[in-house]
Amino acid sequence: MGRVTDLISLGVLASYVSRDAVDEAIEETGKAAKRSDGTIPPHVIVYFTMALALFAQEDYEEVA
Image 1 (tube, rainbow, N blue to C red):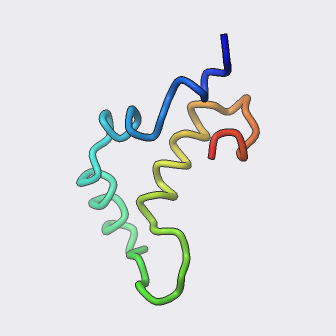
Image 2 (cartoon, rainbow, N blue to C red):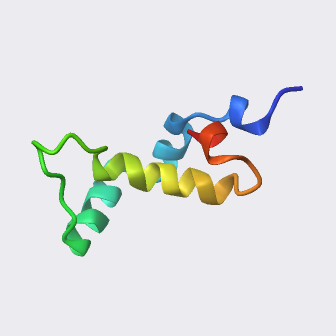
Image 3 (cartoon, rainbow, N blue to C red):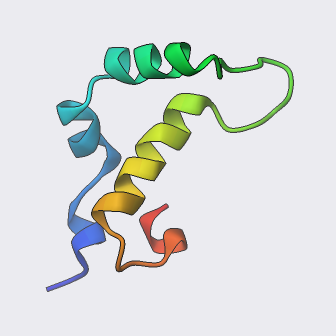
């Protein structure tokens, strides 16, 4: 059997926490995306942070 992170994808996490809910939370913090700065979009960071919390025992690179 492989690692847990091999079996779970971002799609599974996104099916439990909707993009609308994530966007609403981002809007409430006032941290909207800046289109021209080339950084990772805030919604991706939110899902990544949730994945890090779920797989705290894994390296962040493995979670990514």
